[in-house]
Image (cartoon, rainbow, N blue to C red):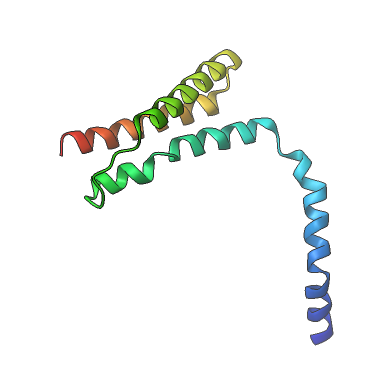
Length: 108
């Protein structure tokens, strides 16, 4: 039993490499696009939460927010054209969440 565990652990890097070789190519561009949308929404969330919790008084730079929101609006229209409802829902929920956070900061 001890040798089988050691053999398994010794073979683990080869199994991980084989897994990625077989499955990494199957990640679609839609998955990466959705991940891009999520990461763009999360770009300003830590700063907004820090301002809301009175940990910081610095808001995200305006030029960063303009670029992030314009990228999200562009992806929104791209999703409308492609009728990709997962991206549409993700973008809309992200806009709602950011708007709620900003309004909580403004009306605090």
